[in-house]
Amino acid sequence: MKKLIYLFVIAMLVSGCATGYHKMGYTGGFSETKIQDDIYKVRFSGNPKCEMGRAEDFVLLRSAEVTLENGYKYFVIVDEKSGTKSGAYTTPATAQTHGTSYGGVYQGTTTISGGETFFYSKQRVEKTIKCFKEKPGNIPAIVYDAEQVKNNIKAQYNIK
Image (cartoon, rainbow, N blue to C red):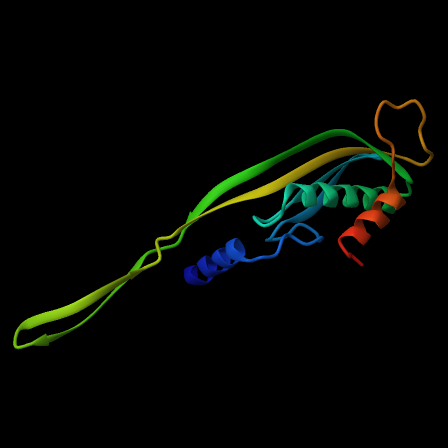
């Protein structure tokens, strides 16, 4: 079982695909928490191949969807955090010895594999949004039109 987990982790670290747009799972994704009726905290975590710009776009997309799903049309960002989680993973080392004995003399070869260290970083973005049914005036922040944000980001990343 441990070998299977190690192989999965290595595959994730060296795979060429950035985190797709989906709910939070083993490879990252989005999640949200309702804080009040009109305030939500929206998060996106990427895998090691996900760039910060993609994570920022996906948290905006999810913010737009949350806004629309809850009967609102507009949102503003009232707080935001972003960062990178860095780490390393070292594969287990194994050794195999093969040899033969000729007249009491042993000749053999030992092969060592594994023991490689992989470094990674994962992008994390979190935004707290306030939703509105009507476009608010006199707010010292960008007022996002949720439908436009959703359509534009989905088109940019070819998301159905």
